[in-house]
Length: 79
Image (cartoon, rainbow, N blue to C red; front, top):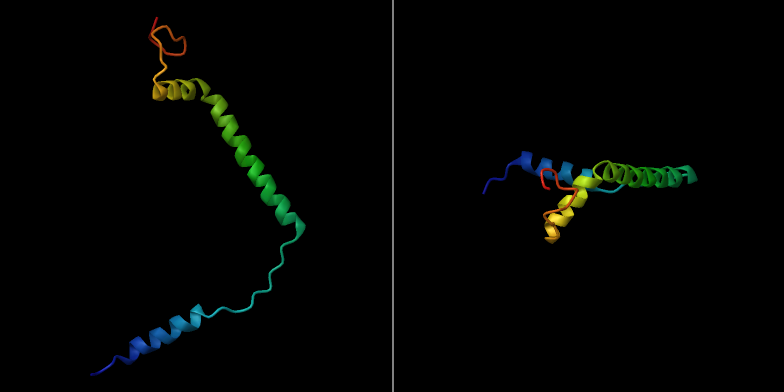
């Protein structure tokens, strides 16, 4: 059997790249604050989008739950 020497070299390179090396990283207290600020921003953006589309969202949920009445004022085109 003849082995390809190139494939053995590729395996050695892959193993060398997979070896963990020590990393000297520092996360200061500002990093946690920045993460918390981003989380609050995502929550605020979600609430703002929900408030903009509240009528459509409420109608969608009502249709899913089967609670739409013919005289619902939130449904356009119905009397």
